[in-house]
Length: 267
Picture 1: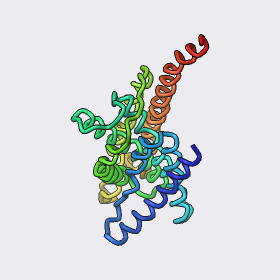
Picture 2 (picture 1 turned 180 degrees about the vertical axis):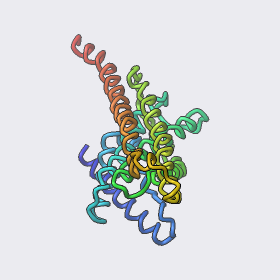
Picture 3 (picture 1 turned 180 degrees about the horizontal axis):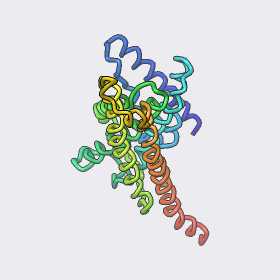
C-alpha cells in the first residue's frame, strides 16, 4: 500500500511538472495532462492509493512552487479524482472492466463528468473563499479542461485487466445520487451566485442623487460571501457520497467473504 501511494505521488509530481513546462512552452496555460492520471490510477491500483497518492503528489508540487493556503483545496480535489472513480463505477452498474460497448462508454462519460464536477466544486470554493478568483471562472474552466483531458486519455483504461466486482448494497448504490446532487447542484448554485456577484461588481455605480436614503442603509453581502455561504451544504453532500460509495464497497466485500469463512470453519 505504501509503495503504491509513493509511486502514484511520484508519477503525479512528474506529470504536473511536465504539464507546467509544456504549458509554458505551448502557451496553453490550462493544459493539465496530470488531471487524467488519478482516474487511471484508481482503476489500476485502487481508490485509497490513488486518492492519497494523487493528493500527496499535488501537495508536493504546489509546496515546491511556494507555500500557499490554497494547497489543501487543490489536494482535496485531486483526492476525489483518485478516490471516487473505481467504487463509483461499480455503484453505477459497471462490470469488471471498461469495454467499447455503448453502455460502458456512456457510463464512463457520466463518471468522468461527475468526478470532475465534484473536484471542481471543492477547488472553486477554495479560490472563492481566499478571494483569489470567482467560483464561476475557476470551477467552469476546471471542469471543461480536466474532462477533455481525461476523455482523450480514457482509452488507456481499456488496457487494464478486468476488476473483480461484487454486488453493491443499497447504500452504495445511492451514493451517486448524493454525489450528483452535490456536484451538479453545487455547480449550478455556485455559478448563479458567482455570476451575480461578478455582475454586481462590474455594474457602474448610480449617481449619488439617484440613490434613495433607504437604499443606502440596506445591507448587502460583500463580494464572494453569497458563494461561500451557499456551497457548504453541497460540499457536505459530496463528502457523504464519497464515504457512502466506499462503505458500500466495503460491506459488499465483507458479505462476499462471509460464506467463505463459514465454509473454512466447517472444514
